[in-house]
Each structure stands twice: as structure tokens, then as C-alpha cells.
Image (cartoon, helix red, strand yellow):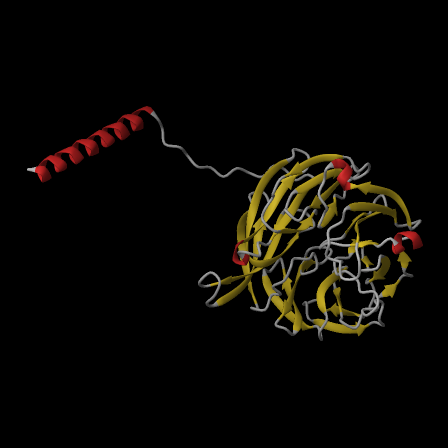
Length: 385
């Protein structure tokens, strides 16, 4: 008898639920899911590579608009990705790794082609399963000047660079780099890599993307006394490398052999004695049109080169003199781990704090405009096309 009463009660409840659903369905239309288009490109859009070290199989790239101060969307990016953007801003390229069972199993490396109008994957290119899995840098995955060739750095631990034809969407070659790492493109037919000896190796490619020639330079970085950060900033085919001790050295990679400029210092003798030095993961940014070099600086000792900058020092690269000094704490801004600046005539300055806050400043005055809290979990790299 008790079982029959329980069954009858449950039936009444179920009937009531169905009746409510039927009534709600008659009154309301089902919600329709749509995919919104990304707003048209503007030069203040910034791409933030987010590699969560607690969950490295689930990286993503966050897209933020500095004008509207709004989060635009995100790109799923797999395991320890490299990321770059085409010269026309329409396409993103994610070089990444997937494992069949999440963190293990069969490995597949791919370059995913991203439609930047929707942030959807528009295609993929399978590449050799040796893509370098490291903290992101702009030179881990990079394009030739016209975007026709994509360079993906490999470490197994031997080093090489995979060359991809972006129009044909296929791998056209793999270049053995003799222990040198990363790819710093110049023009459409060559790139250079940094070697542990402080030298640069420049590889020239033929029309098919195969190696035509190579040239190893003399050492331009003293790796024992004053190592350089790998995240150089670029002005055409010339790269500005900043050292741990606060010196700048240029490298023109446009020819078969690099041409190196004279080293110059970011610091006065007094500032050097006080312990000021560059630091962070992406320590410098360059606004080419105004010849302004931005450097994240902190007070530290030998070995503090990964510490974030408490101040931003701004230099004129023509006169090699400091023209501004921004104390971040005065604007209640935490130290910055990575920095970037937009390329337009009214540039914005971007910075990432160790807690993944995205800071937006006026690049001319240093005045705070916006702080987007915790844009990701371990954001490490800022890209602005």
C-alpha cells in the first residue's frame, strides 16, 4: 500500500513538472544561439597569450579592445602554443600540441589557422611533432614580412625551424639550426636565430622554402658577462636586443650576414650602482614612428632579470636618451611582467602584472586609462599587430 501511495505521489509531481514545461513552452520561444562577429579591426586590439602552468594543456589567447576597454573573445590554443598574426590582421596562427588523452597519449602538432573575424579555427596544418614547448615569445612562431611563410621553432632538444607555405597550407621544409634557437625574420626569404655562443645564424631560403645558404656571425652578445633577453623589439629588419645589465645592441638581419650596431646604455653610473636593471618576461616595447623604446625596470641584483618592472623608462632611440620615467606605484599599478605598445599615431601602452591584470596607459603621457582584472590565469605575452 505504501509503495502504491509513493508511486502515485511521484506520478503527480512528474505530471506537474510536465504541465509547467508545456505551459512555459507555449508562452516562450526557445533561445537561439548565434555567433557574433568580432568588431572590425582597430590598432588598439591586443592579443594576450595565456599559458596556465597549472593546466598547460588548456592555453588560450585572449583578445581585448583598448578603445572600448572590453574583452572581445578568446582563441583556444592547446599545449604551450606559439602565436602570431598575419600582416593584414585577418588571420591568426597558433602552433600547438595536442595529446590523445589530454596530458598524455599520442602527440599531434598542428598550426591552427584562426579567422580573426570570428576567432574560429578555419583550418589546420599538421607539422612535425617537435614544436618547442616553452614560455611564449614572439619569435617562437613568426611570419615573413609578406606573410607567405610561417616559421615554427622546434626543440627536441635538438633545434630546427619548420617552414610553412601559408598560401598552400603545407610544410615545405625543416631547417637544422645547429643548436641556435627561435626565428627572427627579415624580408621574405631569410630569418636569423640566436646561438648559445652569443652569435647569430642567418639562413637564406630559395623560392621553394628550402635552405639556400647560411652564415654564422661573430659574437655580438657576451653571454657570460652580459646576456641578452630573447624578446628583442623590431624596426623593419633591425632588432634591438636589451641585456640583463641594461645595455642595448642592434642587429640588422637584412643581409646574408648581420650588421651589429654599437652598444649603448640605458643607465647612468649612479642608476647602475643603485641596482636598476631591466626585468620581466617581455621587457621592452618599441613605437617605431616616434622612435620610443619602453623598458620595464626594477631594482635588483644579478639573477633578478625575471622580476617585473616597477617603473617604465622611455627612451628616444635616435638620441639614445631617456625622455620619460613612469613610476607605476604612483598610479596604483602593480609591477609589470610583460609590456607592448600599439603601432598607430595615437598609441596605447599595455602591460601585464604577475596576477594577469591587463593595464592600459596612454603611451605618450603614461597616464592610466584602464585596468582589466585577471585576464587569464598566467598570461605571459602581449601581441599587437
